[in-house]
Amino acid sequence: MLSIRIFWDPSGGASMKYLRAFAAALFLPVVAAPLHAAMLSQINYAGWAIGAYSDDDTGAFSHCAASVPYKSGTTLLFGLGTGGWTIGLANPSWNIPKGAKYPVVLQVDRNQAMSLTAVAITSNAAAASLETSSYLFQMFRRGRLLRIQAAGELLQFDLTNSAKVLDMTLACAEARLQHQRSNPFSADSSAPPAPAQSPITDHKAEVTAFLANVLSAAGIQGFSLSPQVSPDLKPWEVAWTAPSIIGLARIDEGSTVQQAALLIAASDGSVCKGSFASAKQVSSDGSVVSLKTACRMSDASKSTISSYTIVPRAAGGSFIAAALSAESDVTGNGSSAEVGPRLLQASEQYLETSRPKK
Image (cartoon, rainbow, N blue to C red; front, side, top):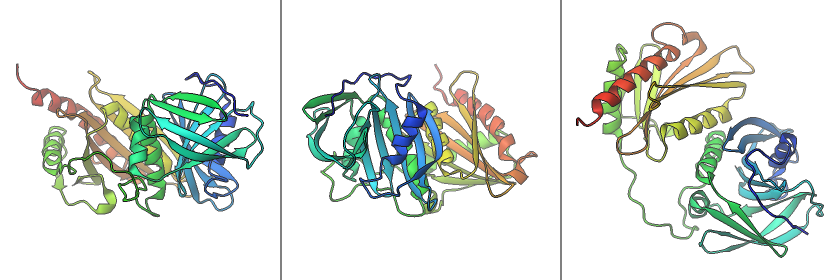
């Protein structure tokens, strides 16, 4: 019998080894994923652990999972991967028959309740597949309280931070799946009708103006801008080049500079197949973030260096400018490693001059 009381404990109530085992096993019986899974990467955010997992036998990507432990020892987990997405619960004190099925009812805030079947994936963990739809995904992102009716118990989960956690988990899965299929949570005809949304805004002109100002202020010589960006590089909106540098830029309407930095680090870390590292620098007034990520390939001596400058946007959200280079290019005036600090300083100047005069 699943008998639990939920209290959030950001410091954790389960060992990291247990969380990793649960996250790795999440998809086993639910979507017929491989029997074994290895962790490829992990990042932590607000008490959640977000990791990417592969099949030990084939090395193929399986899923990304986000888990958070609660004070009672119970863990809540979301998984997204090749088989769709899944929600799971686990507690090391449970003793339930592996493979057993349990009817459960889920409700997010005052949205319509849904009936699911949870499967015991281990003796102390159960998971249920969720419908692959943008409507359901957005409901969990925007929700505040998750209620789960199971085995005569009403369980309640605070969904604080679920928007960013699910965004980061999706970014992890998308990065791993980008050569296999498109975003599984784009709008589809099988999903309940979502509220009407305005068409996607074309920011190319705004991004181009921002880039021209900042690159000039940073003293970047010989740069050129192009609004023609390959569909494979979406959501980037403008490409730019300078000697030894390839750059991209876009607007993220839904994230602050700090949130955008976390999402970028999570995405870059999830696709790195070697050693990954990131470093962040903040402007003197805290408004601009300069983020550098590096991936040293396990089968080669080269490293990929990416430098991001993230600037608050007056209309909301953030400007993001990226500069990319390989290890052989990381020295000299044209490298992305050297350009990052210059763009940080130039962005501070841009903000100062673009503020309305009193």
